[in-house]
Structures are given as C-alpha cells and as structure tokens.
Image (cartoon, rainbow, N blue to C red; front, side, top):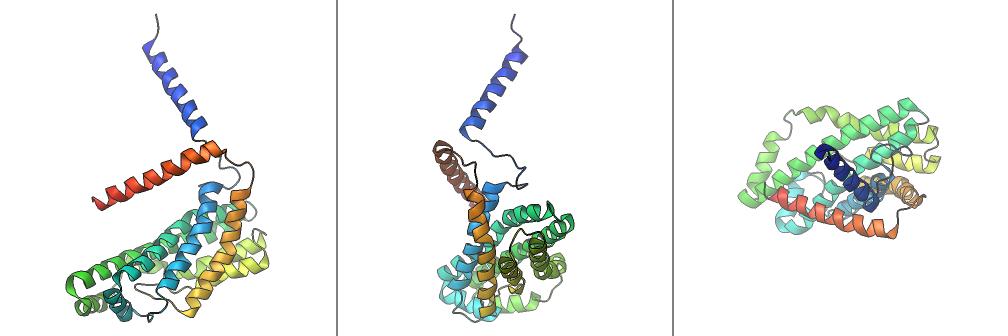
Length: 262
C-alpha cells in the first residue's frame, strides 16, 4: 500500500528539482547575499539612474521653494527626475551589500562598518524621497504657495532619520577606504567612490555641480565593478535568461499594480 505522505513529499521534491533546473539560482559563496547577479545589476543601474535623475533637474535652482515651483511648471519632468533618483538610490543597497561582503572577506571591520553606515544612509535617503513625493502632491492639490508654506513649517522638525545624516556622509568614506585597503578597488576608483560622500542630502534638494561630480564618481567606481561581476563565469544558459527576464518583468509589473491599488 502506498503511503500518501511519501507520495506528496516525492511530488513536492520533483517540482522543486524542476524549478531549480528551469530557474537556476547561483550560490552566494563568492559574493555573499544577494549574489553577484542582483548585486552586479544594481551596481550598473543604480548609479546611472541617480545620475540621470540629477541631470534631468539640473537646470532648476537647488533649494526647495524652487524645486516646488519647478514641479508646478514641469510636473512630469520633475516627477521623473525624482523617481529615477529614488529608484537608483534604492538599487544601491544590493550593490553596497556585495561590495561590503567583498571588503569584509579581507578586512572584516572595514566591510562591516562601511556597509552598515552606507546602508543606514540609504534608508535616510528613502525617507527623504517619501517626503519629496508628499510635497509634490501638496503642489498638485493646494498650489505651490501653500505647499511651500507647509514644507517651511515642518522643515526643521525632528524625525528619527535625522540621526542617520552623518551615516550618509561618512559611510561612503569608510567603504571607499576599506575598498582601497583590501584592494577590492584600485586607488583611483576608491577615490571616485569616496566622492559620493559629497552628494547633498535632505528633502527637496536639487542638483549642483558637486552633485554631478559625486554621482560621476559613484558611476566610475561601481559600474565597471558591476559589469565585471556579471561577466564572471559561470554564466547562465540562454534558456535560463529567457525564463528569468520575463518572470522578473511580470513580477515587477504586478508589484507596481498592487502597490497602486493600496
């Protein structure tokens, strides 16, 4: 007589084997979580998205009254600029995680503190992006004058993420120094990574020449490293890529639709 529990376990195991064969996932030993494919892709696209967003809003003055006024006149452009910048900043977390893991394999303290400080700083930037979005919606619903008054009234209010402002600045310096000391990056690209610490922080901040220098340094440091990671062997088969890419795009589309639905 066949044991039904054994049959079910065998079926589940068979499905698991088929899924792993159809959608293979590389082990994390080489780079640590989240792996070289996610980390490498994030290194390429994160900095480039941030730089693109910064360039799109570069012609408008830096401080928040001018940024709100620019949104009133050019809502699509400004929403795109801030959205790309925020998306790029979000993508930096897997990039930083992989860089910190590589540093930590040769210098545990540098990898730990560089990664932790930068990651906390990215959380702070995500908070700022949320405030930016709310401020732009106030422009749409109440007009630029009322929105500017509201932002002015609460601009200096305490929030817990304000304690992470130093992490935004110092984290990139620690990570860059660690990357140089452990030879994860050469001296030129480590110096370029350190320039990221000069990127302005806070709510409704526009683009300055310093912003562009900092983001160019971030691109120079991470994009080549990301490309190198993605080109390392072993590479996935064409069939696996053709399965993973549509699945990823469909998943992102569903997440976006569900997110908009509340």
